[in-house]
Every structure is written in C-alpha cells, then in structure tokens.
Length: 198
Length: 136
Image (tube, rainbow over the protein chains, first blue to last red):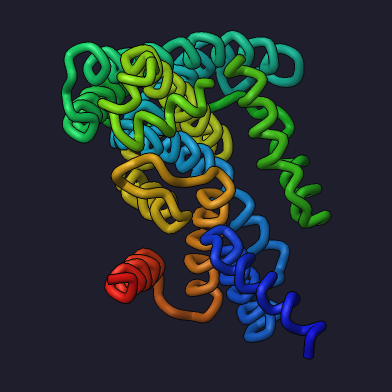
C-alpha cells in the first residue's frame, strides 16, 4: 500500500496540469479512432491529410498564443496570411510562370519569399503602432486591419485566385510522401518557410 | 527577459509598467512577430494548396482562437503555454478528421468543434469555481 501512495499522488499532480490532460485526451481520441476504423483512420491518405492541416494551423495558433499572453488578440492573422501568400504568388507567377522548373523555380521562390516576409512584418508593424502607440484595444485594431489586409488582397487579384505556380517536383514528392506516409512534406515546407522568414 | 515581459503585461499592464517593463516596445514586438508568423503560415498554405486565394483562410481565425483557448491559454492574458497550444491544435485536427472517417457529414463538424470548446474550457472553469467556493 505504501508503494502505491506516491505513485498516485505523482499521477494526480501530473494530471493537474492542463497540458498533460490534453495530451491524454488527444492520445485517447487517436487510439479510439484507430480501434473503431483502423483501415480508414490509419490509412496513409488520412494521416497525410492531418499532417497537411497541422503546420499552417499550428503556426497561426502559436502566433495567436503570443498575443493572448499579453492579454491581447490578433484577428488579422488570416488577412496577413492571405495577403502575403498573394504577394509571393503574384511575384512567382509573373516572373517564373508555370513553365519554370528546377533551379530557375528555386531562384524565383527565394526572390518571392523575401518581400513577402517584409510585407507581413509591415502588416504587423501597422498593428503594433495602432495598439502600442495609439492605444487602440487589440481586438478592434486587428479586426479593422484584418479587414484592410483582406481587402487589399482581394483588390490586388480582383477577387480571383492566383494559380500557375512553377511545377517544381511536387508531384514526385507527394507520391513519395504518400508511399512513406511520414511527415516529410509539411516539415520540409515549414523548414523552407522558416528559412525564408529569417 | 522578453518572455517575462510578455507574461507580465498579460498579468497586469500597470504592474508591468511599474516594475520597469517597456510595455510599448514589447507590444510592438509581439504584433510585428505575429504578423511575420502569419505571413509564413499564409505562404505555407499557398505552397501546399498551389493556389493563393484571397478568401481561403477566412474564418480560420476563430478556430485558431479555439485551439489556443483549448490549449489552456487565458483570453485575459498572463497564462498559457506553447505546448498546450500545439496540443489544442492537434486535438482539433484529430477530431475534425475523425468525424470524416466515422462517416459523420462534414456539415456537423462545427457542432462537434463547438462542443469540444464548450466542454474543454467549461470544465476547468467550473472546477476552478467549485474549488474557490470550497475554499470559502
């Protein structure tokens, strides 16, 4: 009996932290789903789909956490994300085009990603000035600026999507990715993005 | 120092100012940094979808807030962890995909995510209230 006492108290202190509780819930959901329909839930396609959803969602959430820690909130993340994606896409498609491959495409990718990180920083700077200097409430400042950024993005493209990125090697990579059903592709995308953000 | 300043501002702006935190510079940094991260997420989205659509991510910000709150961060600030946020994101992605796999139509997804948020944030809040009542 004496041996079990410290074990249970240790477990209860561990479970009192919200992170541990969440981790347990996530694992339980995963295991239950895997048990309910192993062939569909554990399929490469489903795992790939989850791995693709994770990075962009998680990066936005990490950004949002930071503002929430200061007691603020940032509703303009989507506007900034769309605007900078469109700026990068416009540069890519107008200079490199769908025909570009290999080194040519990689070069223009690097060229396109530099101004987009500046753009995103400028958008953040706008929020920073409004909140830190003019003292607007974060929720109102970012709601307004988010609408502005989305509006600029819509105006630049005329409301349509930008397509025709350089082909690169995506198809091969995706096939290899599905075959291995690892998390290589999103991780690589995140790595490339982090490099460009520097 | 920067991280502590961020937490201090979240706790109380006035207290942070009085212990010598540069509130303006910290807030400035936070929003610029968040802008950069958002841009990064946008480019990743566009490069994975192969399309840059100005209407693509609209509405996602509320799911993001849900994930962050589910991860244990307080809306009022001063409390929260990055690990919790990542776990919150993982949980929402898991539940969304599970519903599809189970054959529940995707039109019911937002109901499930809404329930998840209500339970995930309501339970700790209720527990805290009960603990406070018991303490007197």
